[in-house]
Length: 246
Image (tube, rainbow, N blue to C red; front, top):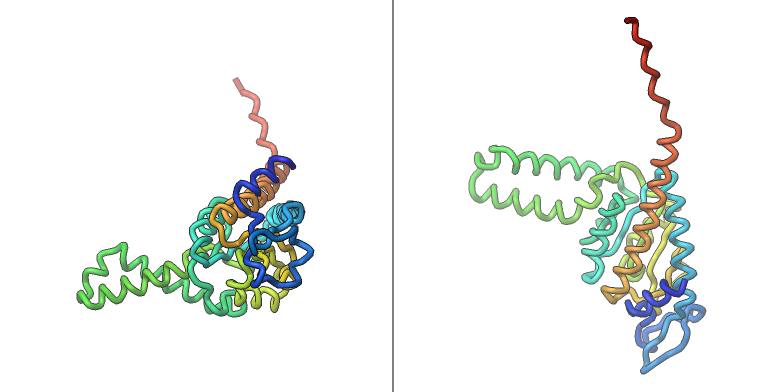
């Protein structure tokens, strides 16, 4: 426990926003203020983090999908790296309206992305005019940026992991409407009531986001490994070799 607290402090997870920007609903998670900035209670961060890790490990152990969402500049590359590390889908560039509520349409757009990749990888692209090649490449780059993280989301996720629910309000709204649970890193300007499992902490600092997302991805990996362990136990034993007839 002491190590976790020290790591959180070193990463600046306890630094909130300026006092003037706070959401009063965050008061149970605030320790105090310093130089007109709210200081988040690290004990509350640890509680939220441990609860979230336990839940995500449970979701992963059941074989369900967890969608990582963080499109702010400080979070994008971290979200992509950690979601990829635990083999889960992610949105790190822009939330596409209807990514959850209009999932079928998003899946059909994925077919177009795959078609563009096929064209680019074959000789077919060279058969088009320079102008058309440029247009197809531009379309591909845009679609890849927005859809690549959802490529393997072949079914609806059971949970969303969000960095800054204020920034990702559209994702949060879609999840809430569909009854999908949410885990979120929330700063002092957020409304904790909108999230199922809030983790109070600095959602702007790169080191803070990095540390929290690493911990959550580790929990997902641990949950996924427990499935593999169960499958290994349930696997049929290898048939015994037949006795030699010699």
